[in-house]
Length: 165
Image 1 (tube, rainbow, N blue to C red):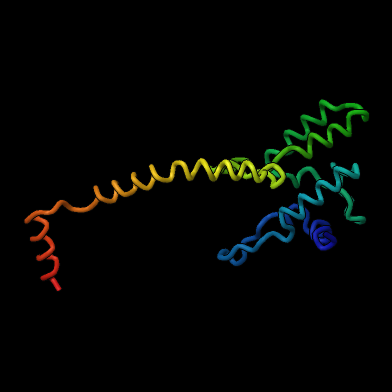
Image 2 (cartoon, rainbow, N blue to C red; image 1 turned 60 degrees about the vertical axis):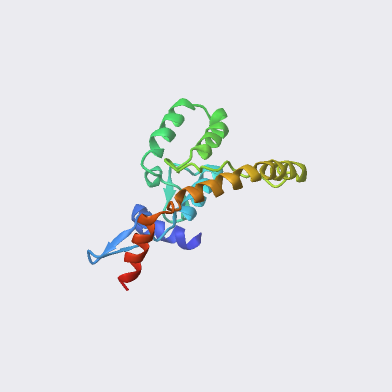
């Protein structure tokens, strides 16, 4: 975190952006998104969000936020005019997610292990075993349907295919 603060003091917002070197290769940002998020949350908790002291390396400049985040934060700051609601403002700011447009999984989430009891796992397995015979029969019929029908035409195709060797 100290190295990230030094980079922010030296380069400002450029430390958070990837850099193109020699018009060919892209170099990773000096401060990763994860570390930047940690520094931002720390500034919110300490009450130094909105200003950055270059000499002390404390705080977070709102210009460093992701493009859509400042609008939401400034709107919330306007709404929270008094100091009494500053703690709720910080809680609300911490809940703003930056991962817009994430692909939702097709499979439902597994949840925590404490939520997946032995009994529920056993019921799930029993339900799958009950369907297994039907699925096996369905698969077998599907595979049979893919096979060519016996006849002279198929024998001829096999002979032609073999003669090309």
